[in-house]
Length: 478
Image (cartoon, rainbow, N blue to C red; front, side, top):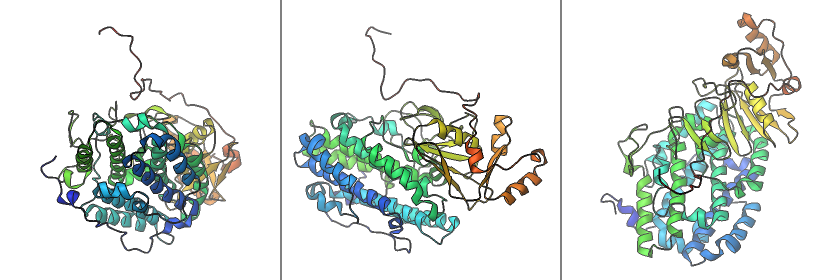
């Protein structure tokens, strides 16, 4: 056991913390299906943990899975106290529940701020920063530093739960998908434009993500890259929380451990990710040394993500996408510009990718079967364009008078000639200020949506094997 283990971890007290008092609390209820799906995630975790500690592991993939799945498809209308559903687990691991609860409150209050009507984006971002300070000041806080995910998934019992109970693990990682994909749905998006996106994401969650067999848990910067660039410490904390969940799952599933060893390993797992354990360290510090607790490196372009298996600089393996370079456009492979509000993102088939321009966003969404969401900057920093496609690829817009500029030219300059404007007058002003675009004509949404220029010549696919599923060897020596 660590010599500097916090004393509260060994305390039996039920001294849980609660919400920061604020006018935005419970704003999540503005989208009832979203709120209920989020409430359901706690129910599922509690039921599975109670089964693990009460000798019902053999029922996890059958009866317990069916019960959890039924709850997730018809989730509760109000938050549920997890301790009421998992009393045995809480009696055994109450100190762990304090860490989980406190991080889940950060999840919910961050969402509440982003959904609060009447505040500007600047006010919301300032309040989220205050929320992070409020959260971090408490003893149960998880570090906001990037942690090496490969290291945290490298213990003798790692992977035990997802190997033995793949269906229930799929539900767990489906929760984590929902808990991370929602931030870009809300970040700098007007509150009146948030619910329409959840009609797409909620359906994707309930029909696909809960049952998807992933290679690794969803990462916040994968699912919500714009939010993660703005609040990397919060993105890291959520990933570290979710890895703590995975560690605990594996510990509880490891048959070779005694009850005393499980208690010790759970405490050590908590210690690894606590903010107090990493006090004085900085993001980007550390190096790839086996067993290094303080390896806080991150991709150059993504400070809100710890290093993952096989990662090199900005290149990482993403479930469903393969190897991707996070520093370049996912559609044309040209480096992304600097700054938090530029270009666009595409959310489709469970992933969210950054692209340089609206042309890339449109064509990438069109290449992906099913519904998609495009979020893009306009000339007005306070008005984000949200385009939602149906199964046939027909787009609808949250800005009724939106017009587009697409004067096709050299692709490295696409962010200059592929843009959206909130009105024709805004388009005309931009053209006047850029004489080289003087002959450009504004395109309506219908006209712009009919264009498809295909995959750019600049696109570069990274061809490497899946690091989570190594190819079988034929024997012999090398």
